[in-house]
Image (cartoon, rainbow, N blue to C red; front, side):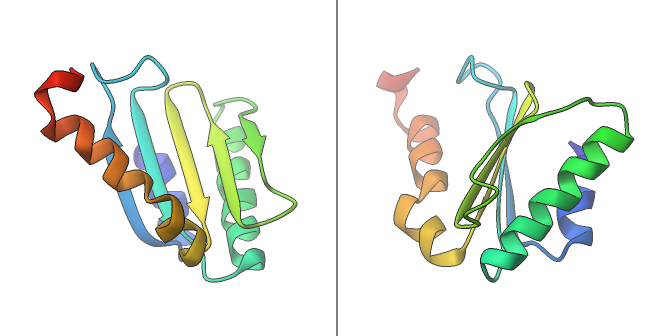
Length: 108
C-alpha cells in the first residue's frame, strides 16, 4: 500500500483515497482511487505506478484502459487501483458505492 500511495503522490495524482476492503469483498484487500488532470496525466500516472510495482518485485499487474486514459484500472491481486479523469470519477462515484457498504448493515 505504501508503495502505491507514494508512486501516485510522486506522479502528482490528485484526491488519492484508500478504502480498506478486508472482510467486505473477496476482490482485494484494498482499493485506491486517484485522479489525473487529463488523459495524458492519467496514463502517465498509471505507467509510473506499473514501473514502480515491477521495479519492487511485485510482478506484472493486470491493466485495463491505459490507451484511452479516461479510467485506468490496475489490479495487483491484493490492491485494486482506479485512476480517473475528474469528470469520469465523479460520474461513477466509486467512493460513494463503497462507503454505502460501510453504512448499511444489511449489506454485510
